[in-house]
Image (tube, rainbow, N blue to C red; front, side, top):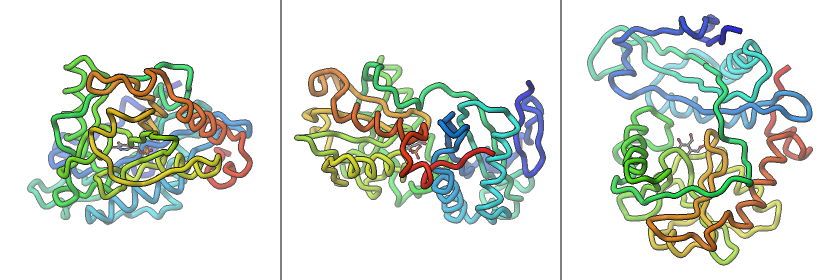
Length: 303
Ligand SMILES: Cc1ncc(COP(=O)(O)O)c(C=O)c1O
């Protein structure tokens, strides 16, 4: 089957989903995007936390002065249509809003605001706990600061920072990098939020540390409460990573990634931690539609 992409209301074949080389956002980093997943659940294919992803997309567009011509409802419908038309698979869904082709120059406002939605099968995000942990470093790059770039907007510009940190990690033989902010506190990883466990308490940095308002992060905090874990949203430093009992990263694309080594230090006992497993198991049940309380709240069925 030819994969289809939604482009401003038109369904086009994957190979024909093209834009002009002078598309404004390509040159100036102003596209706003989302990463969403749909999963095969007990009730059929469902999208996880669609409303929250769409709201974050709309918020990002507002921050970047984008006059989005679609309502939240229309964006959700475009996402649902894209998944539906591509068949029933565990898709990663990528809506993107961008300033289109027209007038070059730093000011994007004369250009049309365009939207596209693609869906493809992207491994990861399965919240499995059977895999081993990853090896990470603390990046030599500082996480962008909201005084320079608004971190609440999931803008392509922000990912230049992530790309440099990710390449640095890979070049040093590691899987992933954790970035510190300009105050030396932990912000997040290149495409995931960060959690540590210390003395049975789950800790994640506040958004003011420079972290994206992750949907998975929020799900973890909610589910932690539900299973009786103590959690805290507070700043912590590089050294707290070194003495943590457990560390994991989380995001829609990545799922839950336990970290078992950081900067040449073994994390905890060097294996995937018990709380990480408990949370991953709980989250997996929720996304697979096995938890009635959250199915109504967080799952949108593809009808
Ligand atoms: C920089 C960054 N932080 C955190 C996240 C996690 O966000 P979410 O759980 O909404 O996917 C992502 C995922 O896209 C990201 O790119």
